[in-house]
Length: 133
Image 1 (cartoon, rainbow, N blue to C red):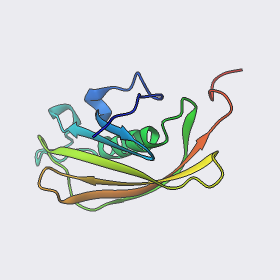
Image 2: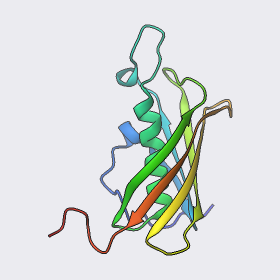
Image 3: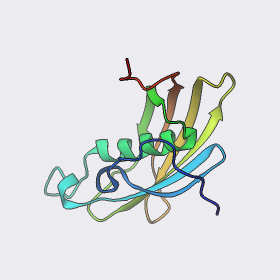
């Protein structure tokens, strides 16, 4: 699978939100291994923010514009994620009708191919960086 050049979120932490597997036309795949630092209890449950962060990162990479930001997200946590799980997010642009507002659908599966998360991310491609004057 051909991977396009990464044009956004170049300084993102692989440890916290995942490693890029591929970036394609209107899609991206990112994977994350759940580590001890992500665990919240003695059952080895991972905090949901790490799976959400992975999904958000995949959505940003599917858009792959330097000035992309998240405006809104709807999410559904389907199965728990635990220590040492390897979770993979697949993000696919579902609507890019006007070029500035982009809707991305993301699914996250664990290493057993079980669906653990799904969401819709409404992204905006700004004229300039959100923090630029």
